[in-house]
Length: 242
Image (cartoon, rainbow, N blue to C red; front, side, top):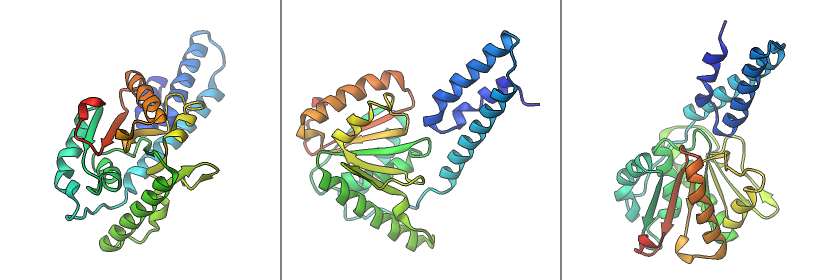
């Protein structure tokens, strides 16, 4: 029979969004054991939820969409360098001129770096129209990569966007585009942003009030979530501003 210690050791293999609740359940069961109270039903529910979450994460790992980079984009020459930086550092700043490919290629680089499996890659934009257009562009690029690699699937399920009154994000999504304000609003119900394993704050050089609030929030959140990665992009070369 699997012991509670063995089950607890597997929590890190579950989805990020489930880990806190699973840990709380495990502590409750341990308390019941120590107090010699019945715990069989609670243990069964905990085990079922743990197995479901682990299975979902494993499915995400095996169903990652293929990625292809356009050599004409300046950022394509730095894909490996950026991927390594994402793996090594919890927060990075990517500077590049408008048109360099930052907005559309960074989510794919995050996938290369192993992100997007534990949770969504959240990608913020200052404006709704940008969130929608980048989501559409990224979907088209992933669909083209699927065709080129012979993968028969609808890439629209991999990318979603959320703006006021509209959320196209599906259960199998890896990337979610949204405005800065939407992500800030989500912190009211998800204060640790557990549905995400990576946050990209795009166009941070604009330094709107929402962007400044968001950067401050993420700076504090990084102290609580050691697993989180934060990527800030800017069209200026003054990385020290962030």
